[in-house]
Image 1 (tube, chains in turn blue, yellow, cyan, green):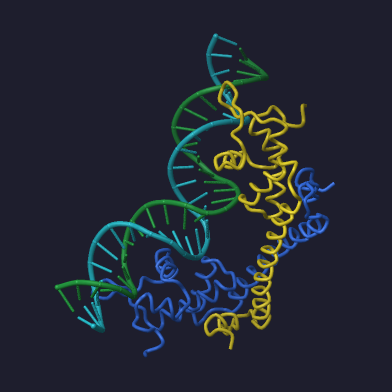
Image 2 (cartoon, chains in turn yellow, purple, red, blue; image 1 turned 60 degrees about the vertical axis):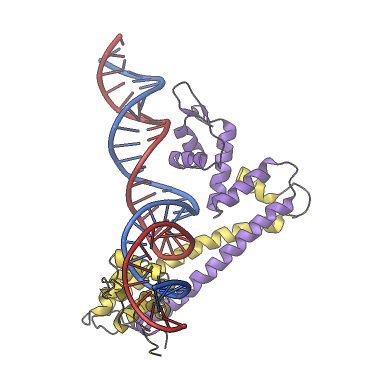
Length: 138
Length: 138
DNA sequence: CCTTGACCTTCCCATGGTGGGAAGGTCCAT
DNA sequence: ATGGACCTTCCCACCATGGGAAGGTCAAGG
């Protein structure tokens, strides 16, 4: 079978790129990707190039980039005269955001771990978790 | 001033609890809190008890609990015959979710760190970050 | 007493990505 | 020609939050 790209339908592009058909249409609707070509029956037709781009988007999503960031990354990707500085700036900013989010979640987890550790978890009602939520950490 | 609770309006409750007026109305609309009493002029009136509950919610949100979880925590909080086991189960499940999310974000951050580290970040177009998104990690 | 301004009310809209599903059209194999 | 797998568009929902419009209430000060 013509593996890569399949028959060029959205379903084949979805399978080949790892981006759901639903999301491909959404990306098109918000202008992240160019409107796909259409067949006689008004079906979207995806080329290898399109699928390559979708894979790019998929990987960027997997790294946690938002669609706005991906839009800029795609522009830079297509621009052979880009300064890598610009790419790095986007990556660094995203990395900083990730690290901040991680720190926040870790703070929550640490608190929760402490409280849960002190909770007997038995039939009795006394519970440091509820106590903390009730009174704030005293 | 009558510090705690202020004049009982939603603004005072918001200031006293750290939950925005907007969110208080929202919590009421989705049934997380009981509909507040109303004054002659149809203003919501918040008691100390209400504000206490809002603070509980605020702290639970700060620990990353979702509204559905908070709903269950509130029920347990109000139930003096609760088994602390039930509270702990909710906390443990949430902790596991937090830890999983942290691991995911850390994986993203690690990949991104490696790529960004290898990127010159200068005028030249060559960029391992785009290369990775283009080809997958080769 | 009446104005002013701060606050309240409800209602709608947007965010960000994702999925679900309905109603209808296309395409291919039997 | 029929059935089923796929496509199309369109609307709805999620979760928690904020913005803002249009209109009502209340208290202080002139």
